[in-house]
Image (cartoon, rainbow, N blue to C red; front, side, top):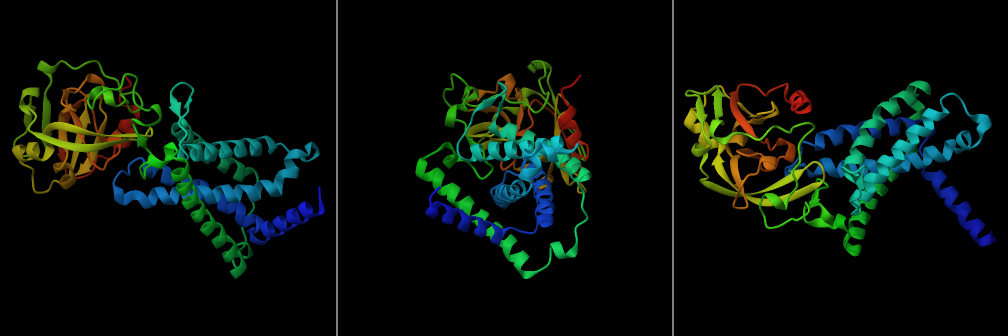
Length: 377
């Protein structure tokens, strides 16, 4: 190595050391970042309105900060891993945590940069990123348990420490902007992402094979966990409207003859979105026909599988009980005979195979459990 290269390497090492936070602060910051990323990732599943963009931006910036922190962590402990004489009974766990962390960050970064590889025949990079991120939480907690060191006040105080950590955050925010410019310059698939991270269904082969027009065949059939009911007998099907109403209703498919058409964007948590024309009956019209009680505050929309979700009453009034998409009658996979169209909500909240609408005083507290176990007999 030449003297010039050696000098540049030495300057780089001094620069890295100058902005490196104290070791214990790095460790506790990694834990904080992992917990924040897991929490914000879970919250993002229910965030679909444009006003929710800061949640996704923070998730990305904190993820980049985690990359920086892991760099310093790996730099500090590399000898304990590469030198077998220093191995302990917890070294294997440490290596596993590191591998899962790197894989979670790598899959998220590749997705942002336009990657869309299928994994295990079903999951895409975003699905894998979510799975790895959730798996990382218990692994990090287990690692913390084996190597716990009580933090001291000296680890966190001091103007120099604050400046070092602030430099990391500002640098990672600038890196986020650089990533956006890189996507635009290279015209990658990441350039057309929504703020949620989802890409248009027509992009990168996300549309189903034989994709045509703007009807049922133009976007994928997806279900949350195990929802997959038998085809519904339309003549026997009824939509029940009850709860805090003056006159409970039982409506047939004929009673839901399309009278309203609306363009709405379906943003699926599996990483795609599609803007389509939907036709059906406004949920507000149905609620008005039933007569909503004064004390009502929430509306729960339930599927034939038991899957359900609750919405504030005033928001629910603006939703659509759709029977058609792109001029076509809904197919079974897309929720025939009736599915909810919930603008600014993520796809899993667009309840399919709607069976009942219940007006309530409070939100259905069991809805998260319902979406996890619905469809299992």
